Length: 197
Image 1 (cartoon, rainbow, N blue to C red):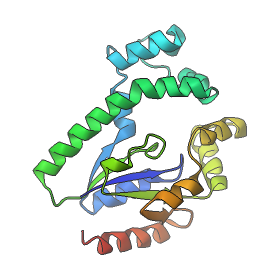
Image 2: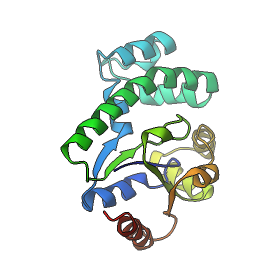
Image 3: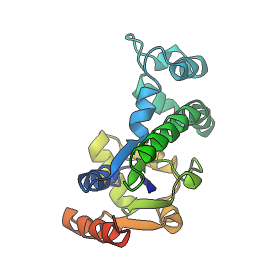
C-alpha cells in the first residue's frame, strides 16, 4: 500500500513519517529527492542557472537555496518556472522508487512525503492521502522559529502553498499535530490499526 503524506510547511510531517517508519513503513522523501536532482552537474541545476542567473549558484557550484528562495517566493511566475524544472525530475524518481519498493514487498506501507502534493496534482499516484494538520498561526510560529524568518518571509512561504484548511478538506486522513506528541501518536496508532498494518 502506498500513501501520500503531506501537510503545510512546518506542520510536522517529519515527526509523523518517523513514527510510521518506526512501525515498519518505508519512506520516500520528495524533499530529499529534490536536493539530489540539483546536485552539481545535474541537468536540473543547469536549467535553474540558465533560468534564474548565475547568482543562484554558489562559488562551489552548488545551488544557493537562500537566494533562489528569495526570488521564487516573491514571484509566482518564477515559482512556476522552478516547479516546471524540478517537478518532472522529482516525480520520475519517486515513481521509480515506489515501483521498486512495491515489487520488494507488496504488503509493506510505502509513505511518500510530498509537501506540495495537492499543488502538484499528484493524488492519483497514491491509494490515499494522509495530511498532517496544524492551524495556520502555529505554522507561522514554527516556521519563523525553525528557519529564522521574519513574519513577512514566513507569510510569503505560506502564501506559496494551498491553505492548510483546504488541504484538510481534500485529505483521506487528517492527523492533527497541534497538540502534544502523545496526542499525535494516539491518532497514528488508530490509523495504523484501522488500516490493518
